[in-house]
Length: 281
Image 1 (cartoon, one colour):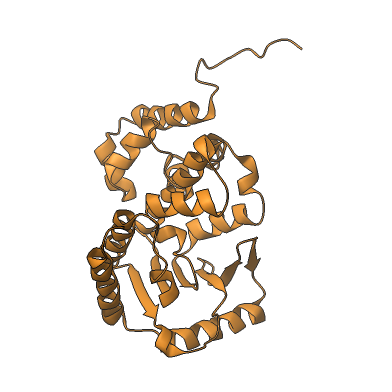
Image 2 (cartoon, one colour):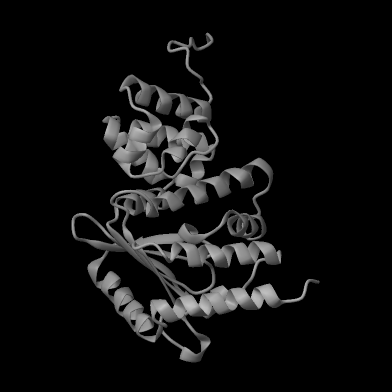
């Protein structure tokens, strides 16, 4: 078979090609990074890093750029290839990511682990390195992909996001105390955003529904609500109305037991203070 001839002269390496295409699309339209940031509602520095190949951003950023430039779904496809692991975006998770990027509001319950949208780099790295067994370059790619999803909560038109955390989530620290403090500080920082609400269900609430179910509800632009139910082994999209309603009812019961956002913030702050006072080992 003859060697494939390069027609465009652009990089054939997906990550570099993604960065090149982003810069070309912007410069062809005479846009500065700041103007692009203002148009899409993200800080211009994110697009600068993406064009330099320093980060890939999240799928919702690639999708927003596709819509802005009229290139859909080319940039999103390049973004997926640039991550270097096509298997991680097979159905149903790939479809969930698309639904998440289009959602106008999200609400979530976490029984054991922080949701990916709220994780720091250290939290993601520790979780994926120990629980999923990733290491080296693959671990770095997986962590970058997860951190890129946090951009969903930024910019113009960012969806509202509510998460209810079991106290267990806040009582399960990272091995490195400084990294755990950083994670708790990030929860306090992001809870200041108008579109983000964090609540805590204390152990004193006793047994309750959803105690072992990690679930995310997505309100879509067509008015439908779907749910993503996840375990350590797999995830499932729930679309059947009756099933979603049952999950929603259980979620509402949990929300009734949760501390208010203000008291939840105080709870997280106390947890941070306790972590700061623990003696070094």
